[in-house]
Image: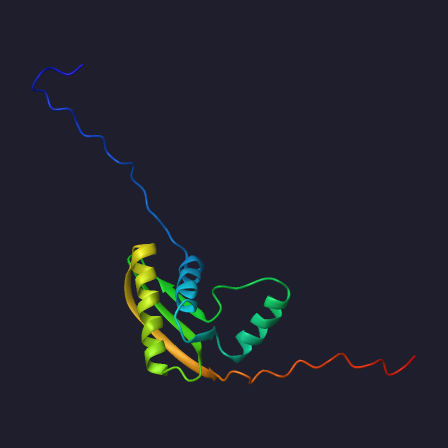
Length: 140
């Protein structure tokens, strides 16, 4: 028991380091980017083809189209998107930049060095190949 007037040392927090790895930051950035109105998909052509196969198998890669570099206190990100037609491209890109920056600072607690948004395509509704009825068997 301490004497009256004797200061009691404040408890100290345990020391250590928090590390958030690149794939976690990329996943959070990808989720944030997908939530922006006007974003049809993330990733370039080849990544989207692989993503379509993955989706058909019931799996999703939330980091598709997102590349990040994570430092001690800062994050830099490149986000590749496809925009829905007729959404204004610059507005959608700025929305993605803001959403990703908010997610990085708010959820991860790191500063944003830069966020580059690359628009690789515009999705026109009805542009997908039409579903064809199953062809009858050619042989019996």
